[in-house]
Amino acid sequence: MNRPTDWIAAALAVVGALFAVLAAVGILRMPDLFTRMHAASKAGSLGACCTVLAAAVHFHQADITVRAVLTVLFVVLTAPIAAHVIGRGGYLAGAKLSPETVVDEFGSRPSGSVACPETADTKPEGGPPPDPCGAADGDRQPNEPGGGQCPYP
Amino acid sequence: MILLFNILLGIAALALVPAVARLARGPTLADRVVALDVIAATAVSMLSLLAVVHHLPVFMDLAVVLALVSFVGTVAFARYLEERRRL
Image 1 (cartoon, rainbow over the protein chains, first blue to last red):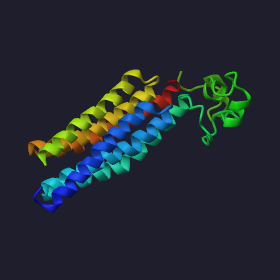
Image 2: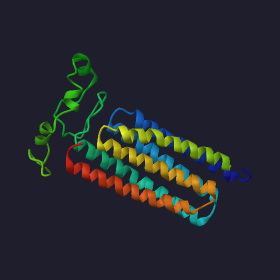
Image 3: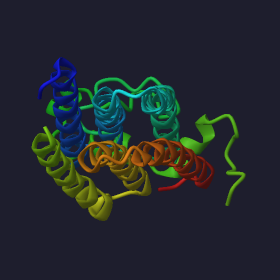
Image 4: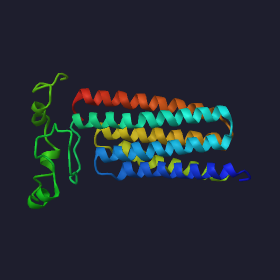
């Protein structure tokens, strides 16, 4: 702790480690796949970026800094793509939405399938949350561009 | 300074515990893929902290490679999920 940059490195490392913990807790505690993915993509990539930058500031060499900046650029460029692709794949595979979901804009679910709080209140006998969320594959296939038959049996 | 980075290494290792719990418990394959993504990001963090703790800048190369490989693995799993059309 004799250089001023050491404080920057320490602060970045603390922030990065805390965001890593936050991502892990979020992935354990969130209710469905999409909110878990939300925690993982944002907090996880921010934690990785901060710790890599902390190492770059600590080493204070040109080649390490180049590698760190490359890593940060790569993580920042690819984390949204990975999250989008997982979310799309999970949705198309039929991942259940959380009962607290307010809007579902992808649109391949049946219309009126959104479990809004009013319908959840008016029909408490387990109707709304399992119905829209757990719609079987046969219910959803005709709404998709491929028609009724799945090309991948 | 090194002590702080050691403590942060322990904290990042603790972050692996909930992610591994989700990996083991995750009801669907997509949840497990997300858990693997978080584990890879945490491993990138731990590699850069290890580079500081042990004064080995080689670990930064490992961090770059791990970030690349985890992205490719995630996209491959997601393509598989999308084409399988079931969880």
